[in-house]
Length: 354
Image 1 (cartoon, rainbow, N blue to C red):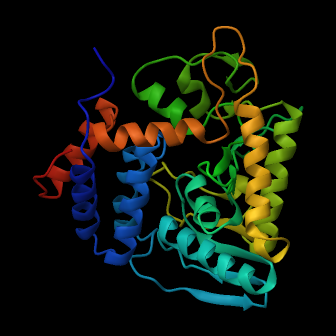
Image 2 (image 1 turned 90 degrees about the vertical axis):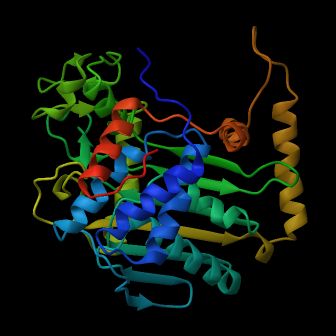
């Protein structure tokens, strides 16, 4: 039996999300931003940040862990920097806002940097760095998330997967994007495998004895952890991203953040995020920098392919290709997640399905 349902139409997913959030009274401006980014995520073929998260947000709002409104406070705002307390507002909305502020500051001061405190899950990091790249500005962003990585030689989960993203414009090409996590696999992929009763590769997770494991459920017991990319290098990467977020925003470190999926928690997420925008045009003409980037990408894409390979992709290239296809054909959602979403909608009296 296939793990995926029939192709989902964009309009069906958008309408259902709007109705789900309407039942908990969340601000319509926030819902619009969220649904737009959710659809964009699926169009790019990224299924780990989609409907599996939709179920969580309304429940956290009902439990008072996520704000319905837009109570935002600028704690410290200087020429090129800003520290903003977003009061547990929906992450996708404040992430879009934060990058917009960073972009505006970069246009005046070459570089703009924004730190968020008391934030929530943002979804796919690339969506925010792309906001900058579309304006010929280099974009960077990173969050601090719940700990699921043990430091090198350590036995406790103390570091988060702490993803980060860069996006850079390259003339006639689509923006060059790097969006990556510190572990070899993201936690939600292991979670979906566990829900479907599927194992994982033994190089991805450790059990509570710090032994390589294939049982997906081993990650979620006490002491289970994700294996970082490059072993100690991945741990170092995670730590640096955490220093950028928690130090500048003065928020909780990873091992004190509650996991997004635990519906029994009684405290808000209290996440931290950091955004940078660099206005290339304040260093040299935009055309010159974009052309230089395009020349490098052209050299790579026109180089000799490896055996049995037909095409060389630049970073982000496969996502751009997938988006074009899914925009026309629709996209698939794992059947279990799709069924959970439709069931929850019915509990709320919503008859629409995806």
